[in-house]
Image 1 (cartoon, helix red, strand yellow):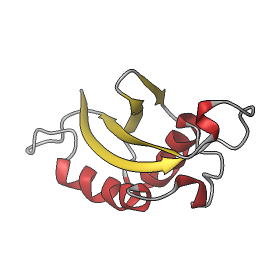
Image 2 (tube, rainbow, N blue to C red):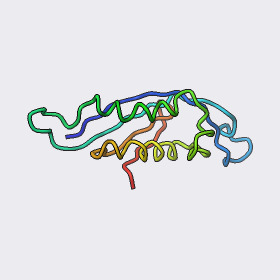
Image 3 (cartoon, helix red, strand yellow):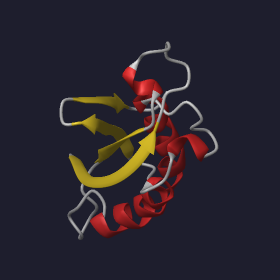
Image 4 (cartoon, rainbow, N blue to C red):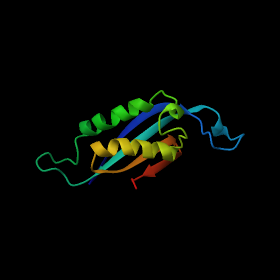
Length: 118
């Protein structure tokens, strides 16, 4: 069975390596939507894959590092593409969520990335 929990955060960024004139070269912001998926069997007696409170406790401190910040100023996010942000988040939440199966990071309502680790 697979469960999910959704989070949102607002951040500013710019993409330093795109060509001059590209709209993402300028500072701009997004309301990101992160969906975290965990996969596994139901735990005996509890009959859940994972406690949603555990998921929130693991993910929220990572989101707090991004929310209302300039992503370019965060170590490892100097070129904060949606793909790079997803990897950065994954690397920080996977140790606390061993049954993490994938994450979706939506940069806009119509654009995003799905990442399932390496």
